[in-house]
Image (cartoon, rainbow, N blue to C red; front, side, top):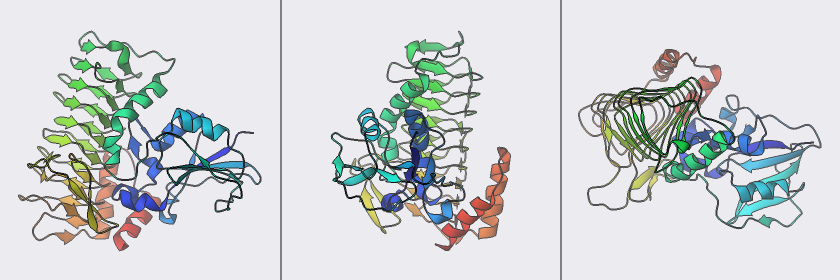
Length: 388
């Protein structure tokens, strides 16, 4: 009998705000796939469910195992790898797998999640990729795109590439059925390029891999893409984008620069919005950590980190390493603060609190534009974040 798999959040999830406010860590997009999708394909097990915070559990349900079945608990921060998959297959009930002192995998009986193991723990040798800070999404995106490209295209043949395009290293370009790519330049000499099902690359786009765009996503005319960039399902992207990740259903449809940035779901960036990803003095970028109420170092490059359902007006200018919470409406002529709390309305001056009912009304309206609805589970998540 095949084991039952569950992805669990750790207490470190609070260090991944604003993105973990609205989802388990395993629902983050890193590369071409979410962390859960990576595990499902690597283990050939679907669906894999989540063990997360109570207020998220309705939207991201937990599927419990039949009694006495083997359940494999997987750390939702961790990306799968060949050594890790091999170690998991050799685990027996009661055994635990650690890496650098952190629990990575635990084999239990049924749903006894908090059982104490009587067996010696197993230490995994070698490094693994894990997402413990928001900026790790962009740090690991290059390798994640390459790994996901290999996973998604193994033993498959790409749809034909239109002769109107200029293509370099065509063996590393994969186009899913229904996608439309015309009159553009695809350079896969620096990394693979993946175009998802029913996606559209409009005329005049310049794409340098590694790059991936999800199902139904759109690149507007003349978009310039530098690797490593991931555009989620049904996103609209335009302008100049470098080493950034957009989760699903978000829009950056116009000119402006986005670099070393992470944009959550259902976000909208107004025309000519640009973000700085490097300080003028080339010093270390420090990011405000909401759960710790202090700034932490994030390397020399980090752009805007924007939580779900947030929007900004035209010509918005984000300073290096700006953090925008969930359901913010940012506008005004000045630079927004480096940290904008969830449910903020306005700019750096006279900022107000976004009223909850209006925030949910507006979120529902944006979702309707892409054929989705604001559910009762979404309402519970908004209420929990709003009340803190």
